[in-house]
Length: 444
Image (cartoon, rainbow, N blue to C red; front, side):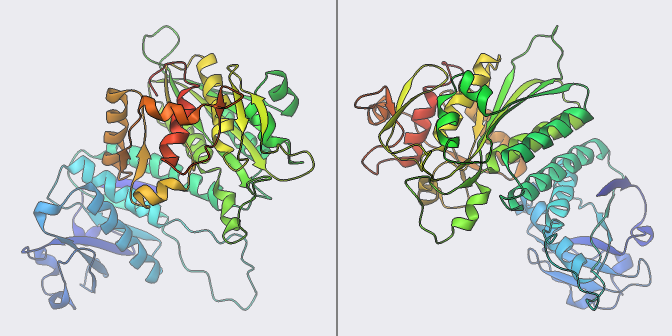
């Protein structure tokens, strides 16, 4: 999407649809006061009213609620509401008059994010018949009408939200398209675009030769080749001091549960078990596009988890990359097995701080629903930074605890660890406590 900032009057927006926010207790701008439909405009949050002034021709008044409640997340939601209306009007360009309330750069960025994210759709597999109506226009251009210096924040928001949409697209594609090799190819495409970004991809034999027992075990039930994908971004430069960040993302491109097979209902959604890997992959692309001054190692273990005569079985024992042995008592607790190797590999490659992202446990939905993501960490300061970043971008997280007592239930009977306990206690924390065994004491 083309995104720009213009210091011009409302009447000269030049967009197919111009959006104006209205706070509770405020009046419409004078140039809209006499427009057709002005009397119907409502300030209630997300309420939208179409006006038809002489210029710019079509205006959408979006209710912003009470000024005291105004903050970036509400701006994202308001922008999404306007983008939805723009689709209804078949508008391909939209302009937003930057509201006067709030910190200008943060609000402008949020309006961009809300618009770009709401513009996402996935219909590439739907047939187009000759007698179909003309396709509706998609939003391809957004202009922020403002005299404030918000261009830098707007550009960061554009890059980040378009990266989010690319990750969503990877999630939505079917698993017969998005294989581990497909994700590896995407990583190679990114590395080809940016000079500071390099890629390494390990195949099945190389994974086994490096003694990555978790990824080897999970992948052995599938004919589809696994991949261990690693990207290195040298944004700060080798001669500069600073912590090397490690990002690790789970990328199980289809998860049947293996021998511990899942129920059939809803299994089609298991194509999205690569969401952590997709997020890491496209985040690295955004970091490289923005040329951020950071050194980064990203590791994405990717495989299918399938039942077959070759599949790992409950009760089997494997050895992970760092030498720890694991009783595999549930083959549907596979994510922690491949992440364990990936975390150890990231440490081996020089990561000094680690963040892993994964669709790891169904138990987290019981604990937090779909509103918050769970954040679990061995480092108070680091996790506070991560949670603050989430709050700033509307991706809110809630910290769950770690405690030495949780380690007791991760211990195996005949191996160092077990990937699943016989009880149903603290399922999300259990998985995190297991993964902590593979970070080598690094902040994670």
